Amino acid sequence: MPKSSSGQNNTRHDAVQEAAAAPTRCGYVALIGAPNAGKSTLLNRLVGQKLAIVTPKVQTTRSRLLGIAVDGATQIIFVDTPGIFAPRRRLDRAMVTAAWSGAEDADETVLLVDAARGIDEDMRRILDRLAERSGNSILALNKIDLVPRESLLGLADALSRKGRFEPIFMISGLKGDGVADVKQHLAASLPPGPWLFPEDQLSDASERLIAAEVTREQVFLQLHDELPYASTVETEGWEDRPDGSVRIDQVIYVQRPGQRAIVLGEGGRRIRAIGAQARAELGRILQRRVHLFLFVKVRQNWVEDRERFAAIGLDYDA
Image (tube, rainbow, N blue to C red):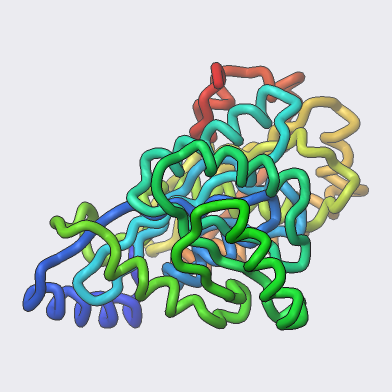
């Protein structure tokens, strides 16, 4: 599972020393919102390392992912959740269920709103569901660099009249504006208690899962609209080599032979490009040389396959 780099280790070690002189706090914080609100970008910023994949596509995040950050004597366990929208398929229902489950189990909930999008149908559904819960949520208006200040104030007012939010932050997860304020607020508000994870651990996700997600990110980025959301990636082999490098074997599953041809590309060019970018990204994350081998297989209607749901951490029966 991912751990801090050497520079991050120094920062966390300082935090541990500070924690030794003060009562520790620890808790879960769910990041919820509509698709493409910027939850994964914010998670990566809060943790200080890329854990969650980020693409311009909606519904990129499929299952919940924990990102672990330290602020002073507090360990903050962020829960990155799938975007919440009106589900139509079994996969959609499982993703939305995973999002609300993450929120219900958390000590604090941060509703992230794309300030440029405002209050749309997806956001109205989220606000209605939050209104059924007891207690307040934290509101974070994201992408504030894209919206005039007057519009931001109007949106904040409209949202505060539709829900119980305390406090309200205006941030840019991409640029980092206001993110430190959110983190400091959470560090002070979480309950007293011992840390639940080692000081250098960044996530509960295995390296195999994160590696699969990195490749899936490249599938989304490089195939654009040519391939529907009918693909998934699984890490089937992982070999740590004596020279410190790692061999990773992955399968990209699609639903039809025509989709397999799209992923492969003419003369195998597309799959080589996907592999090259994923290999470079994995090398940065794992901090060692990566030998990545990709295979493309057809598994008809995998989105109705109970085993595939389990592999990506979703409830088939949701």
